[in-house]
Amino acid sequence: MKTENHTDYRATSNACKLCSPLGASLVFRGIENSVPLLHGSQGCSTYIRRYLISHFNEPVDIASSNFTEETAVFGGGANLKLAMDNIIRQYHPELIGVATTCLSETIGDDVPMILRNYSGENGEDAAPAVVSVSTPSYSGTHMDGFHGAVKATVAAMAQKKGKAGEHINLFPGMLSPADYRHLKEIFEDFGAKIHLLPDYSETLEGGLWSEYQKIPPGGTPVKQITAMGDALATVEMGRILAETESAGKLLEDRFRVPCFRVGIPMGIKETDTFFDAVSTITKRKVPEKYLKERARLIDAYVDGHKYIFEARAVIYGEEDLVVGLASFLSEIGVVPVLCASGGKSGYLNAKLAQVIDDFETKGIQVMDGADFVEIGEAAKKLSPDFFMGNSKGYKTAREMNKPLIRIGFPIHDRMGGGRIVHIGYRGAQQLFDTISNTVIASRQDASPVGYTYM
Ligand code: SF4
Image (cartoon, rainbow, N blue to C red; front, side, top):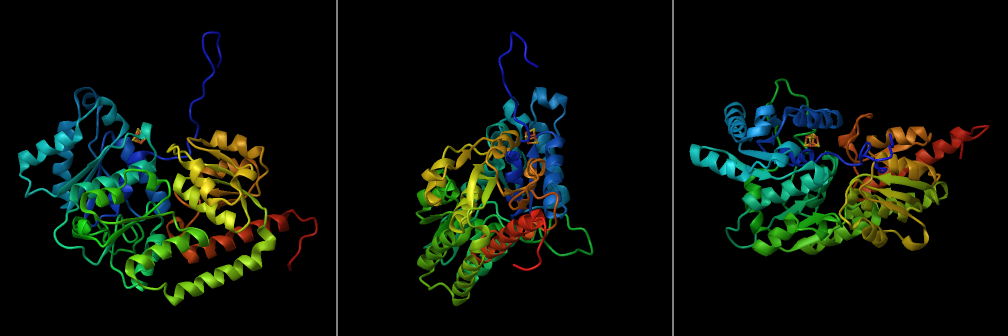
């Protein structure tokens, strides 16, 4: 309501981002024998568990230091120490990853100091490794929490013990378990050992258990993280991440591990750059298997071009995913007329200009720090053929009666979110077929006569 004494303002409605400790929890869930612990109220961990469980369809334990009204006033140090005791007793973890929440950040709890006191009181040898990361959600997105947790883990644990080893550190960002499995396959085919962080390819998409596992099997072994200072090289994915003080940069500065920064390998151009980097590091040619996948993909591009050329897409999600997706869409002739993200790195426009051909002349609208009200208002003026992003955009796409192709995170209203392959020639092939068939189906459904043959 507007009164004489109030100026116009609008709160964020359905932000195009998720909360920061969610990203951190995902990283800690991808480390072997590790437990994520949120320092704050129970509602934060319940919300995050709800989001992760709905996407991955797997049980996800996230501990909480369980703030009450009293804790919010007098500080949560005692609660955090009690939570540590309980986790160690019940889970026997090798690592506890502590992420802060809005509440503990707002009252100003000094988590590193509380944890130092805890190990002083209990003896460092008896306790599991502890990594803490500051993740105030009001100043960042789930991606900031994710990258922050990767960096905090590397900063706390990586060491240089000897000469450069044979392994490659891989920080791929927040991809699907199927993407992680595909990356492992690629490096194995190059004959290379990787230390992948995080790795929730098993912990968040494992098989059926006959008995409940408190900590799901799988994840990056702690000893692989400690050995990261001895790596031959690091590969880090994300054009926007490349502009930040990332884990790869930390290893480069601290231990002189060369860092190869590539975009998320979506589509042929970005995947070529990624394969070139792996080829350079390993001094091996791209395996024939991937050259064949690439050739089949180009053939499919030629076959499907007539159906999707100049189709218009609204795309949204994490900034680096949006950049990767825009690069892919641009090379298949789809115009990403609106590229939106809840992230606010300040680099989105510049990075999109790098990957979209004729960016300046296409009139592409770029929105950062966006919510779905703004995305919906902009989309209505742009007559898109389809939306592409996570389930949070469904309401907007539905209002406009446009199809939504689901990728990224979270996917709450379809099966198989964890099994989508976004990356590599293989991922591009799957996405290309999905996009083509979505556009074809829309036209077929809108046709007054219908047709059964093209
Ligand atoms: S209060 Fe902050 S940390 Fe907790 S769920 Fe909400 S956004 Fe996330």
